[in-house]
Image (tube, rainbow, N blue to C red; front, side, top):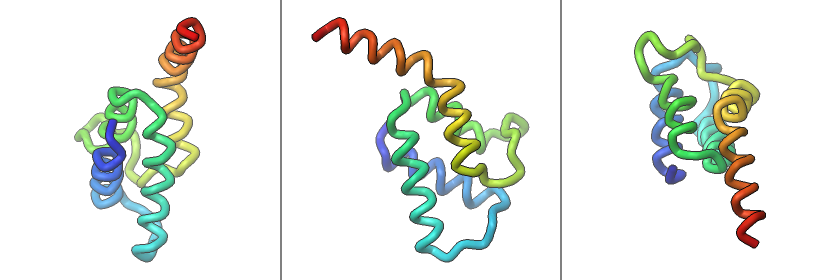
Length: 93
């Protein structure tokens, strides 16, 4: 998934979920860090984890998730796929 789409989803989630007070620079840094990590995962995994924050009744969060929570969810839903991709790339070389 393109980084700008990830930033859009994160910004939307940040705006609709309760979050700690941050100035604009801190918020932009937080969203940029999350987007950088999320961009390593397949688009459908990112959409499920981050886009899922915006779906009524589906989101488990009332608060904007911590870096740790996002990372755990991305790993849980995406690790097997990343391992498969890495194995295919190793076999191709």
